[in-house]
Image 1 (cartoon, one colour):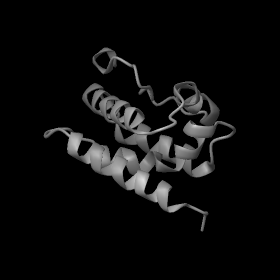
Image 2 (cartoon, rainbow, N blue to C red):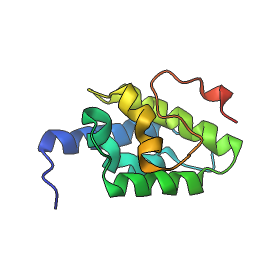
Image 3 (tube, rainbow, N blue to C red):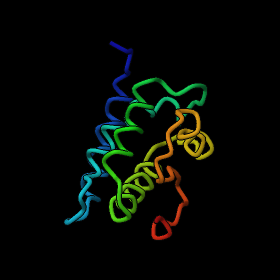
Image 4 (tube, one colour):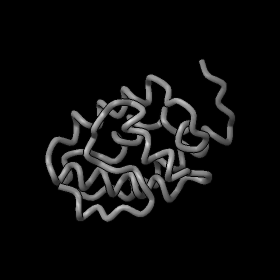
Amino acid sequence: MRNITKNQTMLLLVVTLLVVIAYQEGEAIQCSQITMYLAPCLSYVKGGGNPPPPCCAGLNNLKASAPGKPDKQAACQCLKSVANAISGFNDDNAKQLPGKCGVSVGVPFSKSVDCNSIN
């Protein structure tokens, strides 16, 4: 198993808790699902390099789970909340993630995106 420090484990738990709290009733995709899909991307969005295969698999899962506009907007809100909650989050790395994985998700992973503009 990967070497995950106690601080990283706590950060993932706190972020998961925050996004679950931010989840809004009636959404087809849950923020906790999105967080689980993209948890393997944490090291990439913080440090760059090449995203690990489980990260790219998570993006594919997100794409399959958020096919319509309401799902994409909900996913966008979730990702924006997560991005703002992670210390050391690098917006440029996050924006490059879909291209590096070869997955067009239709949902930007950014601190500053306007989620209402997602189609």
